[in-house]
Image (cartoon, rainbow, N blue to C red; front, side, top):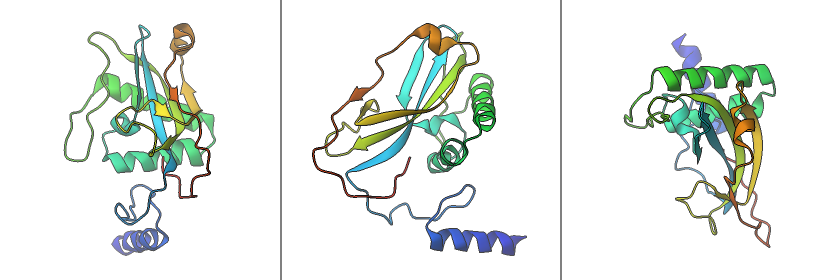
Length: 182
């Protein structure tokens, strides 16, 4: 069993692929272009309070870089809405019933306001231009695409259109192509 695990790990390292629970250990071994894609999450409570747009790292009690691999697998690679809904339902249940604190590379969970619970989640794929977007403002992006909305109670519909994103015009010159990393 350990030989199979080691074989897969070596393959992932040489192929430069992250697929949880395997990691290519490429954290500092690639060049980021000026523009690339990232994931953002928006949560909503039973009273219509929005949390986000934010990085998805606090959705799962895993290292932040592993959360990205899970998000890729569930929301980019997989197109089955049942798998996506099941993931969202379980993530919201965990956030509402057993939150966790920051520890090492694990981000503390999203937390609803006191006495409230999260009832819906949206996952977005955004494009960020690092030459123009404010790195501290997770809502400032050049484009946004809704990947999935899980809203069994209709909370997002009741909240109406919210002005969540600060869209910048795309750059006049095309960015160098790079490997998109949500």
